[in-house]
Image (cartoon, rainbow, N blue to C red; front, side, top):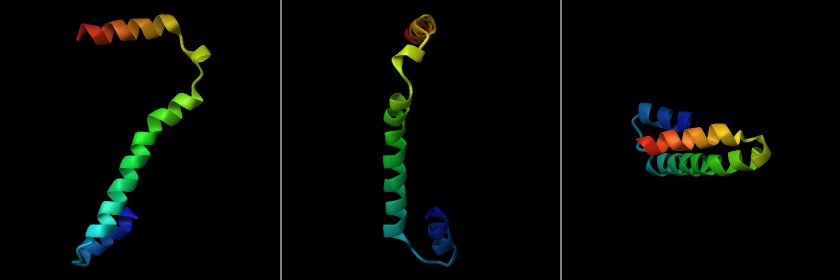
Length: 61
């Protein structure tokens, strides 16, 4: 769809609605990714020691 918008721009058209739709779809997709990733990873697969070390290092900044 974004290729279509780029083509319209190249042709001198102003695809405002199309561009807004592409932006909205992309934003919604990006915002859904963390939740979908969480569904794929079980708590059992997390190395608690590594998680704690990472968490401690983030707090140092």
